[in-house]
Image (cartoon, rainbow, N blue to C red; front, side, top):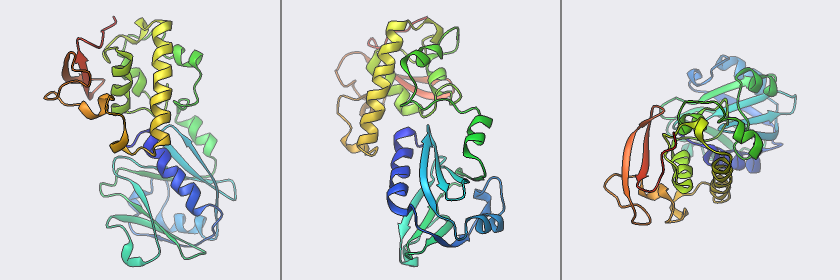
Length: 263
């Protein structure tokens, strides 16, 4: 599933491509992708509107319209946006399409239909309603430390909890834990302030690097654990042994002998 850097790349493309272009036509091919309105209503509320800004919090990307309303683009596992002019270039699994005043088309592609598209009269009210946690690139070190206090669940479970901190998913959490040399199954409440500060700094540097690279995995550093998440592979440094297990309900990789369990 796309995590903060991947979603930010989609938001950035949207922001740079369609802002302030009036929507002259909306075609909904599969209204099941729309989670809180019908296809007809979606067409009606967006016709002749334009997106004047974008906003991202964690994995949630919003297009903010000129009348104060917003559209949530929650990508799910396979959601993505394609831009094109020729109808023959429409993505294979396009669920809806916007046509803008310059004849550019935006197609929302989602093969597995796990995405969530919502029309929101009030974006901030929605964020408060779902209790979405602070963005992983915005949260302060002090507030980050607070999310661990008194929790007996695993470190990984806390970092994946979007109500505590938003934007992190399975791959980046494993990367953060590897670079911090801490076992992802460690008890969150046992993480010291010193270790919390280290995790915080690594989280920010890893995410910011990925954002700066537009989440282009092929150029991620070879020393990152990202490229070695396989029990048959040797760890990046050659030390320890890569292990795999379910932690917080997710398939998790770590390096035994390098990442310390804290309990």
